[in-house]
Length: 211
Image 1 (cartoon, rainbow, N blue to C red):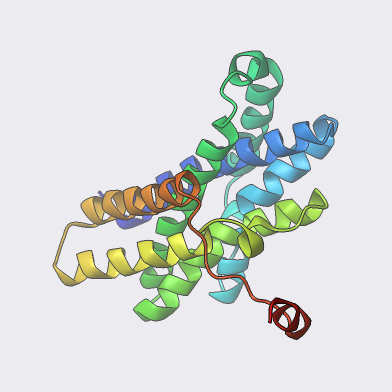
Image 2: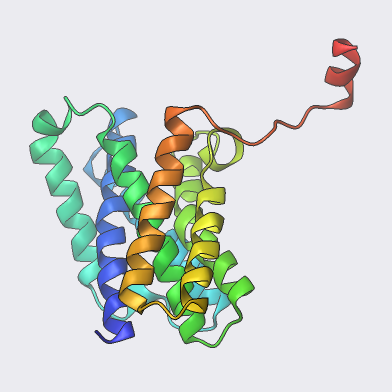
């Protein structure tokens, strides 16, 4: 398969997954349809837009309306099928994890296609995967999950390292993308399941109180 086609497919799937996540978060805050759509589109294209601006290229969603349409489909899916989605209490988390993994892969592949070194590609993958969630949380007036909860952005970094290892071993691009996707998903799922997180920073006053 052509690499550009692979990137487009991944970005499409990631857009839908992230849009579902953002819209469900907005529904939990009792936003109206427009508010839900704004949250969905922000989380779906936010990270990719930052990546493309940093790569000095036209943001991916400005080249075709399909991403805007995809978010609208996600909105209708949540609006009309919420009754069936509601029993799946963690459905939003699953979609968020899929979006994180898919956009991480897309960010890495697009950065490499633009001739960036691997360390830059890994950073771009992290930005593509996690920046949209930060924008979503800001719009919803929540503390960004990336800063205070379980492993999130670090899952993207780990996925990027696995991608680099696979390419170094001359694995096919398709297999590399699948393996990276699975690594990011498994890392995120295990982090939530077993409450794995990075050490918390403590202020000078807190350290004195403990002493």
